[in-house]
Length: 374
Image 1 (cartoon, rainbow, N blue to C red):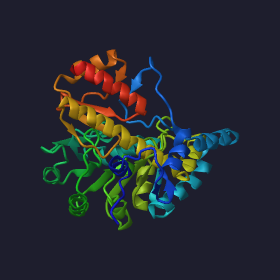
Image 2 (cartoon, rainbow, N blue to C red):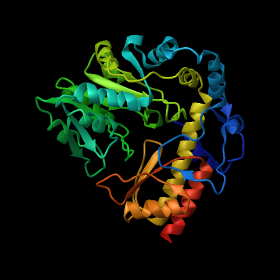
Image 3 (cartoon, rainbow, N blue to C red):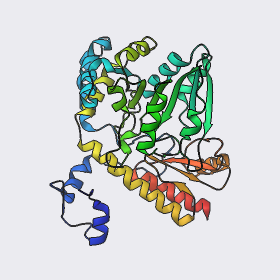
């Protein structure tokens, strides 16, 4: 069945305030039930749209779970790992020994970079992309092959495959990519992994997987289930709104998980474990966060269209656009206007990554952008 686009329907029917039904629940009723998650930006506060966070979280249910965990914070956290590990394993359709909990997905990225890059191991990655894995590996002697994005701001898969040699230890794919928000065609990515995973380990960073709206888009966990040389990372920092408490996980074959776990450097705290477990049980806040992301991206697109600024349609919770000026001067001007935007991503030295945030924060950004652009 064709996916129902409620925003398009409301626009066509002119009934934005009327009752209709979506998945058996009226839009008006759903809107009311979502009111408890709403937040507003207060004028005078810094508008933080630089780090791809979900400012609506954590939900009340998650907060309550963290409070209940206080009676256990006197204990070391390792004994509380099993519940969250089991929930994640069930969600991903694998056994518990396929899961490695990490302090945010960043620890998982760094652990993989150390495990496969140390001692002159070579790593291949797109450029620009999220750098934590590569920059950490480089500190331990890894050589990084950075392959420029293609003209569509996509991973150049053919060029990346062409860099594989006898010293290659890992291929890094961030999909959707950060900072561009681009999503690789599923068939192309699957074919690529089938070809290269026989030659080297493939790391699939799926931090923004929840935001993908392409129906049936596959996770690369399917390759893990087949026993392939694939590691997948996920995080609770984005759609779940838990960036500040640092919970993520890796999915891989059990033997790979054992190898990676030897290089972990910290434990997740008890309250963070409780928060992540509660977040997995909650669907309403998850759907609310996705809808707010859609709304905010449309606000950003509309402003950029009005100003004639080039941008990349995004499959994540940010938008990458060309300011037409030095990114350093742009970020400085935005900061002066009270808006914090993304850092520079060379060689795209005039492009800016703007995160979605509270609706009112995005509105403030749009006002500042229009004033800046005249």
